[in-house]
Length: 150
Image (cartoon, rainbow, N blue to C red):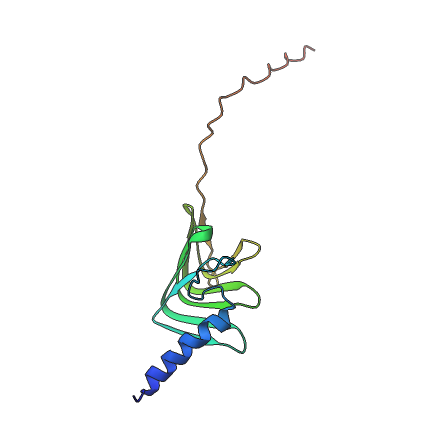
């Protein structure tokens, strides 16, 4: 059976992806010792460099990370497996539990659970946070002191 150059490239990509990601995005295995959580990346194209541990996704990038309830879209994304850092670039939108961030570049530090957002020049980053309603009954406030008589 002969493989075309594209078929060979896809095969090599499929083989190198688990190595490059250090198991973070590898296909699930059903062993007792599995401790990783899946982060799904969908894009028009993806490439993985097993030497550097960097995976690059380009075009209509969609990210789903159910362990942290994160969904994101961007034009491009790079996952730095050695640093456990995800960088989304170009028209980035991140949604987590109803809270959202929009920016040109958003970096997610996986171990710290921190997002760092940067805008285009002369623009701003937009974040929307859901503020839960106060469900505790209101406490009566302390009486105000009487006005000072002079």
